[in-house]
Length: 301
Image (cartoon, rainbow, N blue to C red; front, side, top):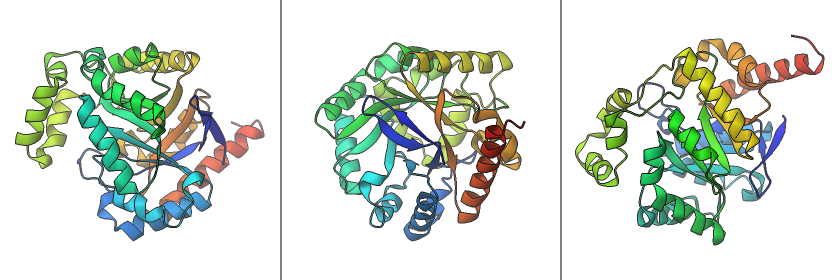
């Protein structure tokens, strides 16, 4: 396994990260269908094979599973990233406090603003970003980031010095990749009051279908080129880039080798997240990864 160094704190992460929020197009998190012990066993197995980077989010429902895993893996040997959808400083402070309690840890390695679509939303979430900055000053988190769900968010992140890590959606086909999210609805749902009301009145099972109306599930070739160019520029601006949706939210899992062959040569991608639900998936992903790496080291195509 290769490793990368990210952020100002020089955090060492495996090139493959373990995603615990695989939902595909259904909105049902596959990892939460596993018991705490089942997912913990898989995370431990992946850790023993060199994967030390775990990705979660407040909304995923996998905190109990990660807490269970930390009973068996030294905390300082793994890197935990989590994400929050909040906009207001007070809400973010509460979520950080809740996260530390639920995981029973003193710190989180990487905390991100979750699913930012455009520059307008970035402004609406200034309070949440302020909370992350304060939490880092207190030692509760080590690195601050943004999980982008739109080209405008990537553009905005590039010029915000507090943001050290950018999670960007990238794959060979453009499915579930970032596109321009500048429409009225995309900006309306970024307003804190509107977001709070929506959370209260919209049934959770309806969220995926409504999200699909806000976000396109397929970016154009032009948008894909823009994303690639922007994340490389973010890397040049000293942001650490983590790739998401390598398998297109499950749509590309029949072509694991093609997906990994696309992302692995991109040196500005420090790590890429793969959602896994079994030891067999860990083995298969690592087998393909190691084969591609071996061929690359030998100069083969």
